[in-house]
Length: 146
Image (cartoon, rainbow, N blue to C red; front, side, top):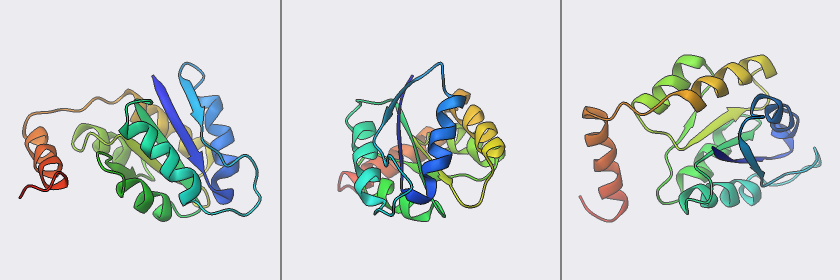
C-alpha cells in the first residue's frame, strides 16, 4: 500500500518513528523534515490531495493536537479523515467510515500507542453494507447534491 505521510513541527518526531512501523508499505513523505516551526496546512494539504487524486491509497497526518490536520484533510474533496487516539477508534474509522486518512496527536500519544493504532488502521477493511449507504450520502452532499 502506498501511504502519504505529513506532519507539522509538533508531529515531526512521531512521523519519523511511524516509518519504522510501516516498513512493508511505500511511504511518500510530504514533510515537514525537521522540528523547526512551520504551518501544518503546508504539508497536510499536499498529502491529502495526493490521497484524493489516488496517487496514494491512504494517508497519515500528525500535528500536536491532531485537530488542525483533521480540519485541513477534511477540507479536501473526497477525503474522510479520522482523528484517532485509540485502537478501537482506528478500527471503527475504517470499518464504519472508510477513512482514507488517519490523523494522530503528536503531543498526546506515545510511539507505542501510535504503532498499535496504525497497525489496526492499515489492516482494517471497510465493512460496507449500511455503512456504505451513509458514506454515499456524504459523497453525494460533497458533490453538491442533497
